[in-house]
Image (cartoon, rainbow, N blue to C red; front, side):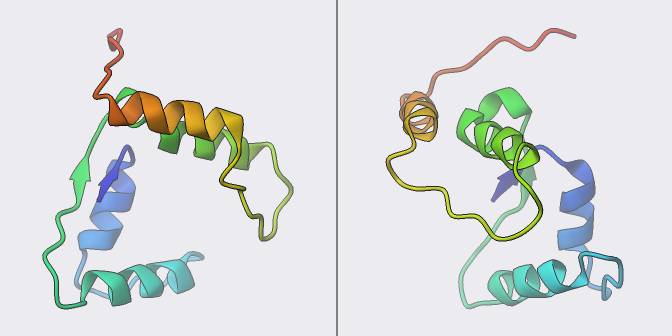
Length: 93
């Protein structure tokens, strides 16, 4: 699992119970992490996972609530293909 949020990595890697406003999400992630498989949580820069960045930006434009992103979303399909080809974008520092 890769994320561009170092805070999310810290929370998900923690063995203590997270009691913040995202406790339910944290609990569900812990259930997935604790399954009988190997999982590695690591940091990646936003430029390394454009499809996730696309979904995050799209999510900011939606109202609160449950939303389904259809498989035929042209923007998502573009970035999934881009990511699968191993393309990279320079990071300006």
